[in-house]
Length: 433
Image 1 (cartoon, rainbow, N blue to C red):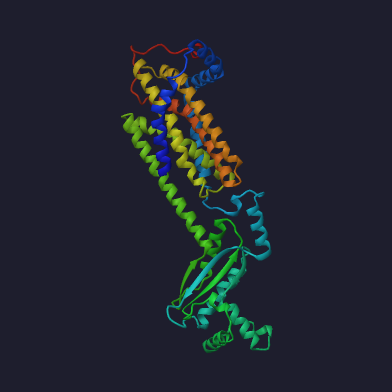
Image 2: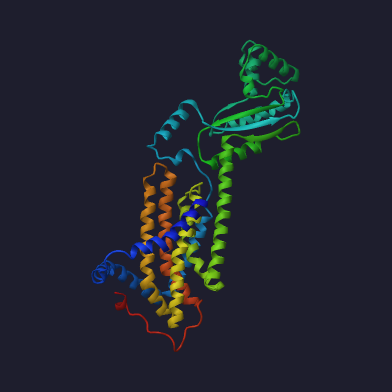
């Protein structure tokens, strides 16, 4: 955020200094430049003429269609979920993904979830009831298709119990006597067993259940944790805490989601406030924010209907999009306000503004869409999809500025009442060509 802000200010400074100096250099050829611009701008002028006519002749229809699209978009947003799968962020042809999938297939899961049982006192885990709770939780985890392997002190005690009973499979169970558990653990230490230190602390105050699972979507990990927490028998014998890389992923996902939502709301509020101050009108400022909200709502709604989830990268979509979309809105609203104050007629103000500022809106949006198309070449799926969604958002913002914003101004008349005498002549379609 800091670097982007500095970059924007640097661009602004260079635009009003270096760019102006460079444009003042060179030979002037007004006649040739005018003919080239006319040839290049003829299709664009015809398109803008159609836009003006559509706004003037179908104002209320535009608002009704926009309201219906908004309703569908909000319904789609209700289907959105926040989550990510780090492995699937890479395209299938990337070696990292291929190697990771092979390792998981051969060796089991690479993602871990750990339940730590803390008895709060030395030798506290040498308790049959506590260990039975751990064994029940481990059994529940083993029954879940997402889990590949589980490890705990219970496995060692079951093996020891079976070994001391002639390797009878019937004795592959957890001992029910606290004294027998202590003896087994003492014998295991004396015999040089080293695996025990991976699951218990040196004073036997804490022990851990490690759950190994494949790299999967974070919402599936959330579901697993909910199921295990529901099955966990909580009492006062020991305090149970959850940790591990799997939980870390979920926490990161939640932190990013909450921070981005807060960041977008803060950006939207600040921009809306500044728009009201700049145009010295709450009505103009709030109306001008509708086209900036539209592309974000429509894009998120489409994601919801398509079943796409919001991940740590797609959550940036809203804040980036509003920063881009607000530029065109300011240009259009400022020009329409200026034209209206001169002629006193909303239709003429729309025609004069769209014929000049409309060109810049279309060209800059096309350039931005082309620039963000570079993300399509990324080896990461999340970057490629982010580029597509951002291109769609920019296109939707352009459509909102060309149709929705003028329709709102024509209906609500935020610049004041039209003048009855001062109104200037309407611009004809031939004038735009």
